[in-house]
Length: 218
Image (cartoon, rainbow, N blue to C red; front, top):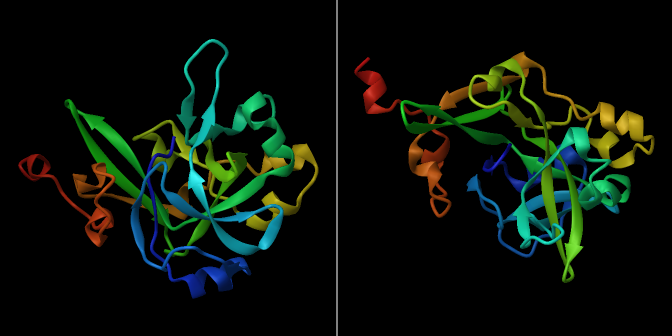
């Protein structure tokens, strides 16, 4: 899964790389610990030349069960699951990021790992969106983890190698083929400070390398 990520790049860099102009309601600022329910920067299928803000997390209403919020959607069932089938067809999006977090469980403790491209460039997660009460909300598509991530978690977000194809392609089979793990060598990772566990903390410390005290004693 993907439950936290970062986007620290300047808007002008994002505009140049993704060939889209920012249309934001909030001030530009680096984000080191983006959490569910928060606004995220997105390029939508119906407005491919604009960077806009959507809310991260979609509500589903299972039959006979209380509504619940989802922040991820599995690539393998994206076309079949009623919640996402329509979005797969006509409401795909690019969710802009430059790193993401996964947590490793060891001896009863959870240690956050931070992953980013080796070239430290921003990238796009595959996403889909829908509207709830006139508010657009999105989820990140996940796939099987590559070997770089797999020792920590068995899933990882889909980082698109061809971002524009996710918006422009119309063939379902070709779209599905885009939802694959990033090559192992493309990512680097390091342990980071557990302050990232708290969604309200959003500072550069969240992504800086960190060695827990108990590990230094080994």
